[in-house]
Length: 80
Image (cartoon, rainbow, N blue to C red):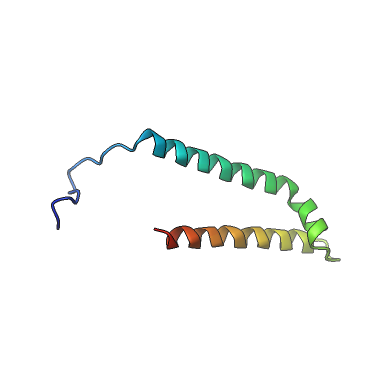
């Protein structure tokens, strides 16, 4: 153990306001993205994935959105 590591009984330093603001803005943008996509998922599916079945466009648009979200998680963990 090094002298700079935090022990079990020591309190952590508070986060700077800029970090908290950046995290809040990032979460708000992610929520906005998810909300807008949820409202327009069926329209996006019909326009970009013209499949003849009833659930084909919705399934295709949802799977493309989820694959983007999975890639974001992989990219975030790679940059840590």
